[in-house]
Image 1 (cartoon, rainbow, N blue to C red):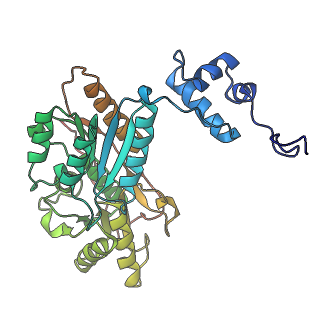
Image 2 (image 1 turned 180 degrees about the vertical axis):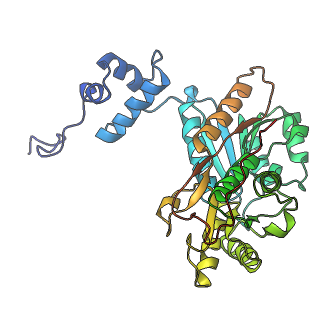
Length: 361
């Protein structure tokens, strides 16, 4: 009978030891031991570094006792096709896991469960809270009754992108108006005088905010008071962006700001279908800085939503409410960065220097 039964194969890689993890992270073996055994006394940053090192070195993560979880948290998103939604959701899931919550992702694809059905399922599962990412709350025409019912049941929730003051709920939003204004200023500084906006349906609160920022920027940088001739409304899709861009190109616009990166891809398609070039003939600006936008042809100039900051603020606000901490529920509004890449350039026939921004009061 073989005497090696049950032993590791001599050629098999040796299982990493605690000292290997400690050496990789740069902490003591005692600190690694605390993480492995789920004990307190370790900062969140160090704990995450040790867990990451476990993954890198193939050290099996310890099972956490069921009693250590703080409950389930639902994350409701409108879809997973627009890259910005899974980007935010993925970060929220990671942060919730670090806070010892069990995240439950609920997407709303066509033909799937409705938002109300997901809410009832989460309530039945005794979820500790819910994070809504650009869900029905972002639709200015949708009923808010579902959120009032949640409030009546005492279930904490946070709204992402689409603050609703009438709900007195914690909310985290991107500053859409300021972002669009930044994009218009960028294009005006490149000599563009006819700048258009490809926007989604006006019933959505982010669309209204973007339109407000566009109206203000036209007046400030281009001496244009009426945004209507410079605005094309469509859907937040590639096809929608292409349709809106065609409308703006027909009216002679040399630059287009799009309400999403997906729409911007459609706008680029519309320009190229006419035998024109981006940015030599028409400049395009997207919105979100979704994954892979730096790899498009040309690389997309876009307004970067602060995904990590949005997710951190949303999870922090929800965790505070779940813990029963007093909260003012004041809206958190975060700024976007303009990421300049290859899809914007000087106007082909600039008509004089751009106007300088007026002082803001």
